[in-house]
Image (cartoon, rainbow, N blue to C red):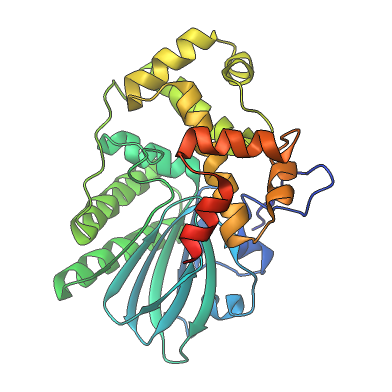
Length: 312
């Protein structure tokens, strides 16, 4: 089983890698998986997949990671913040977060589900939410699990793993998707977060346009900041694209673009320690001044003010 890597080239700027499949890059073999859709990892066969990531550099992930620790201890660094994971703890890491594994104890026992954007999108769509919603995207959640919650999530995980490894049968994919939906519902109960329901119909063509726009935005926001670019790529008008975005998120397309660019700038400056010049170059601004004006317009503070406040 092989997985692809992708990165975004920059003009004379330090290499800023995004959408990296960290598990493939470190040659970690999943316990079970469906290429470019779903990966399962666990320690049930006396292996420790995360141990291979101990010395890996911080990596910005594009999948959604659901991690459940049964025994032992782990230390994760998420967006530069270190946290210790203890037994019977669940961790959900949404796309766009930067992850580094700092420590995994020898006696550790865990199971982990990694879903790619197209699968995450489908799961949230079927449960009536959107994974790209501002209240979920770029966030992570951590919570203690009750004994019953450990049993429930482990049972669902075991069923998913068994079916992936088992023979094909009619409606197998549909059944697996139902199991993933069930795991999502369990996660909502564990973390007690309240995703914002979609404002529009998740079965309409408009919703497909909305999801495709968010996917394009994740890929191209480093280079393109105009609504016209995304509308042209989707073969629709700029006015229609903004109408669709507002229908599903109460934010127009321009606001989504500004937010995406600023989030990437923040990651470059805080996580990857880019200078102001390096960040403006990587984001294809003509000058540092133009980048600073853009950042302040969107956030209300200059990049220097943001970095100083974040590191104080």
